[in-house]
Image (cartoon, rainbow, N blue to C red; front, side, top):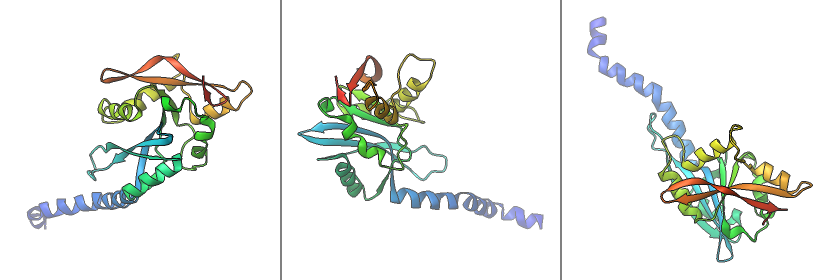
Length: 217
């Protein structure tokens, strides 16, 4: 018996591998083919319309591999219309369950952000703890730099957002929920960290974007 098993050891190893990883691969394949998993959203204005760029995860179906990140953009009169266009172009439903930050561009400086961002509060998948960031550089360039300078675990912006959230720093970390609470509260004042490009690197600015009742100051 043992001799028979030894002769067929490679067949047994192959079967064990299939049993261990095939169900995972099948489940992952079905999920990935039906959803676009968004990790970050960039919003700006272009030609009077809203320009939306999403950072999404691309899986390579390797059980031990790390998913890649890619950007997809669309411009439309509203955020929801832009996201719908992105969804159509990619042929997948958009999932916000892993969205950790929303990057806002300086083109929104004349926009009421409480009105602009309100649709995100109505998306049950999106965590209201997603961090808001502001940039005076090109939003898509910042997001691409975030991917290029990140590590295997996360993009650079996600790393900066996590760093800012630590209580040991003097940086603020404004979430979507906090922004609405402060903007609609008694004082009406809210602040968002400014992220800027320094050559090929992303860094925290010493300044913060200030808002009153959702309007840039």
